[in-house]
Length: 198
Image (cartoon, rainbow, N blue to C red; front, side, top):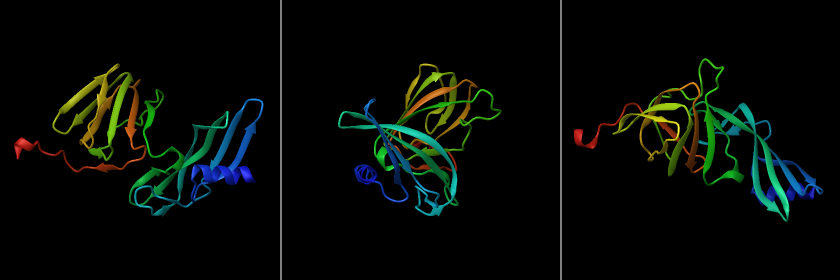
């Protein structure tokens, strides 16, 4: 029981997060800390209003070593259904603040894909860049017009530029990096006029 309390304190966990268990492999010199958010309801990361679990995704993080033992954190990270902000991932305190990097892929067998036109929006972040690993993607940007990026293109997307993804290839793979790890995305009604057009 003391290892659970120790890791709860070391990770700085607060409700709804708690340590469900700690597995120590002495031979492999490995520690796996299993973290759980319980059944909900959960606070929306945007407005803190409690909402029900929408779904969850298993995630794993490499953490700082415990002594000489490699340490991993594993959790089913819930997404909360907020009446105001839609479906949002619950914040994970051991992975904030900082940067986040992930690969976005279009599923080849899907009739629609995760990267589809979402309407004009902007990200309230400090840094955002993406690198096209495979395929191509077309955006429209505030003050820049339509731009198409292909395999090998690296794009620094200045925050908070208004943009929208227009279309992409069926084999698209994009590495996206942004900071902070969790930040608001704001819907925009119309593309702002260029300053010299006013």
